[in-house]
Length: 585
Image (cartoon, rainbow, N blue to C red; front, top):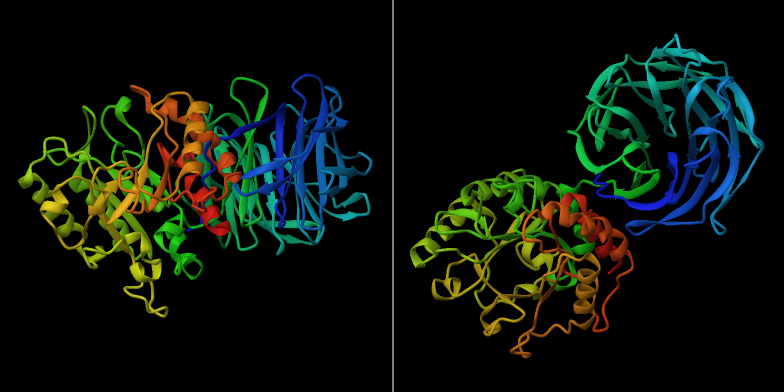
C-alpha cells in the first residue's frame, strides 16, 4: 500500500497556525499567523526533489487561524477568522498564484459567516468546501458550506450543521469525494461524504485514532493522508487510509516528528506537511513521496533493470539489527521486516559467537530473528533486491561461521542469488540478478545478495555467500563486491556533512591499496558517532538529508552515492532520497 514517511522537518519561518496546500504541478502554498500580533502571511514554493524551494514570506491581511487550499489552475482559496475577540466572523480570499515571482494576487477579503477555526478545500472544477466550529461557547456544533469560485470570490451555498466536535478539517478531490476529520473528546473521528449540489451526503461519524489537531489530504483515487498530534505528548503522527464506501481502511499510525498543530496536503505524487514547534513559534516542513516503499524497486523495474549495482542508489541502515536491547546502544527502532517494508535495501549486520546481533558491548536480537524477518518479507512475493552484509564477528571461529552460513541457507535459501564465485557483483544489472539472467523478458523476482567480510568466506567458500571488501582493505582483489565505507567519527553534524561530501567528490572508483581493483560502490555514511544515545545524535543528520541530497549530483569522476546509510532510517526519508536519486541519475 502507498504510504508516507515525512521524517524530521526543517524550519522555514516563524509564526503559528500554519496551513499548507499543494497542486498537481508541485506548487505549494502556505499561510500562517505572525508569532506576535494578528498579521497573516503566505509563502509560495515548489517541490524540488526532496525539499520545497520556498519563496519569500508576504503579509496579506489581518486575522487568526488561516487555512488555504490550492487547485491545479493555480487558484488559491484562503479563509480565516477575524482578529476581533468580539465578532467571530469568517472571511475568504481568492487569489491567483504566480509561480515565477512566488507571489499571489489576492482578491478582496469578504466575510461569509459566523464561526471559528475555519478550514477550506478546493478542487480543479472550482468547487469549494469549508468547515468550521460554531461561534457559541455553549454549543459544539460543526458546520459546512459548499461553494464555487466566481471571479475573485466564492459564491457560497447555505451553512449546514453536520456533527459536534472541534478543529474540523476537510479535503476534496476531483470526483466530489469529501473527507472530514475532527476532534471529539481527545479522540479523532472522520466522515466520508460526497457532493450533492450545495450539500454533502455524509456517511456516519467514525472513530479512527486517539489524538488532537488532525489534518487531512486526499488523492483522486481515494487515498487519504492524515496527520495529528498525540493527545498527551507533543509528538506528531501520520496515517494513510483508502476510502471504501463510507469507511476508510487505515494503516497504523507512524511518528515522524515533535511539534503541534500539523497541516498536510497531497497531490497524489507528493505529500507535504507543516507544523509549529512544540516549544517556540517556529514553523517546520517536510515532504514525502506517496509510494509503496515495500515495492519501490519492482514498481520501477522497467527503469532500473538495465542499470548495474554501480549505477543505482539504495537506502542502507547502519547497525541494522540494533533495534532492541539497551536504548543507548540502539541505532534503529524497527525490525528488519519493517525496514524492508519501509524501503531499506542494504543492511549492516554484526553477529557474535552466541548468534546475537551486537553493537559493541550491547546485545540486540538473535540472528535467527533477523533472518526470519527477512524471510517473512521475501515470502510475501516482493520483487526487490536486498543486500545483507555480515561483519565484525565478535568471538567467531570457523565452527561459529559455518553455523551462521547454515542458518542463512536454511532460512533464506530460496532467495539467495547464486552466480560464479569470480563474478564482480557490481557489474551485473538488476535484470541479471532479479530476472535470473540477461533475458529482458524475464519477470523480476525477489533476490538477496549475502556478503561476508573477513577471511571466513574466502577460506570457507559457500555458494550464495559472497566476499565483501572495504575500500581500504589490504586484499580487495578477493572481494566480489568492494565498498567505500568511511564514516566521519564525529558528533558534529556540519563536520560530518563536509567530510562525507568531500569524500564523495574525491571518490574515483579505485581501492586504496590496489587501484587496479575497482571500488564498486560509494557508501555515504550519513551518521554521527556519539559514545551513547544514537537517537538524539541522529536527529541533526536525518533532518537535513533530503535537503542536502537535493543539491548533490554526480561527482567529478561521474560516480553517484550508491548506498545512503543512516541511523533511525524512517526519520531521514532515506527511501525517498534514493528513489529520487535514481530518477535523475
